[in-house]
Length: 66
Image 1 (cartoon, rainbow, N blue to C red):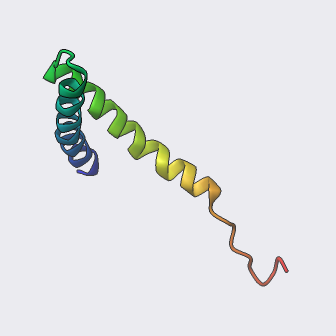
Image 2 (spheres, rainbow, N blue to C red; image 1 turned 90 degrees about the vertical axis):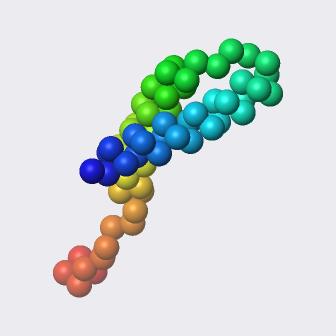
């Protein structure tokens, strides 16, 4: 369920960002391309951020280790 929610919100925010950027740069706007790119980036972030954060967290020191 988490991945579906991320995909939906990534598409929504991606569409908003894509529209604003296309208007500021006078470029073309393809809503399908923007949605696909936003969903891919969002799903990669869902996998990558916990993996990077988990490896960076300090280890807990137990009484037997000290």
